[in-house]
Amino acid sequence: MDSTDIGELRPPDRLLMGPGPSETHPRVLRAFGTTPIGHLDPAFVEMMDETQSLLRSVFRTDNRWTIPVSGTGSASMEAAIGNLVEPGETALVPGNGYFGGRMAEMVRRAGGEPVTIETPWGEPLDPEDVRTACAEHDPSVVGVVHAETSTGVRQPSMAELTDAAHDHGAFVVADCVTSLGGVEFRMDEWGVDVAYSGGQKCLSCPPGASPLSVNDAAMEKILGRETPVRSWYLDLSLLEGYWGEERSYHHTAPINNIYALREALRLVEEEGLSARWDRHRRLSTALQEGLWALGLDPVVAPSARLPSLITAQLPGGLAPGDVVETMREEHAVEIATGLGAFADEAVRIGCMGHGARRGPVLETLGALGETLSSHGIGVDPGAGVSAAADELGK
Ligand SMILES: *Cc1c(COP(=O)(O)O)cnc(C)c1O
Figure 1 (spheres, rainbow, N blue to C red):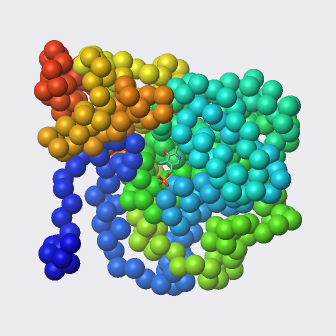
Figure 2: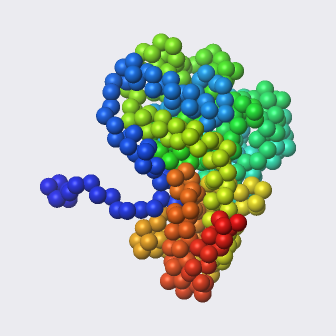
Figure 3: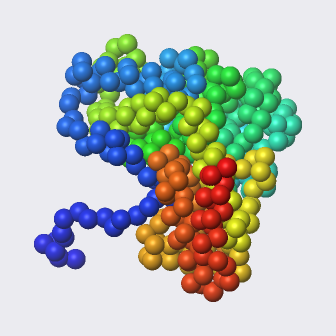
């Protein structure tokens, strides 16, 4: 490639209705584009405090240790696991999806021993299985994925899971990357010790600063570690210097990502967290009615279905990759193929944050109807839009 041919940045128009990133709210984008100031400037320090306070609110926690980690959701995930798990310790991880597998890999790299709680993809964990596994393996950490984006499973019975872990003296780490700010999550009430999330799913932020909250008991374990955390960058005992009382330099905060996250969290406050959960539920129900009207089939039982990410089986043996491609190339709508056990038969459609609105949902269903039709499926291309509009009109 001749570098003189590289033109001005002009990404194609896309409606982002996949597993993330989601549509960015225009106000968040404006905040992102605001001129950076120094990360130790008292004015920025005040924004840090505000961001932390807003984060506590969206996590439903009083944890002092609530910060945005620099990096995407995987960075806050690795901060959670890498700090909490010490070499030689056992951590239980869920076997019901892709992100439980990533947890296992992070536990291994932290020097720990992951033990997978075997559960079929598409189903949630059973608290009784966690209890049994705790008795058998004596873990110091139990990992749970509250919103498994690879399958579209929401983990119900979170409080029962944390009870099972706590009865055995284990700490609970919850992945709420695809639920925070869109699907009911109550950190303190449910007894979650460490929770991490990301910006670009239900919070509708550009990726780059990722919520993390750690309770006092977990922080005590972390600060009392016998060996230093293997990652210098994500070591919470060092980050305490910057986000805690001292405000000393550790690494340069991603200023604009913090601006954006702060604005995204202000939007959550304005709407109200429970109103936002309701909106996601309502728009997701409409999306689902539209999908079933187009002949797709749900993969996950209603009791464990995640509102923010729907996995749906395609009709007529259509290849997910072909549908995703037509949706992108002909309709400028991004959705994703299934993963793992559902890779060959299902698509994944997000309903997150700024995408969880009437316009984006109807546009997605309209495009999908036309896509199915163009691939030879005998379906009324408008059936999805009608069903969803009916549902929203109820
Ligand atoms: C997206 C996601 C992550 C990883 O976040 P990145 O921002 O892609 O690093 C982790 N867990 C779950 C459940 C996710 O959906």
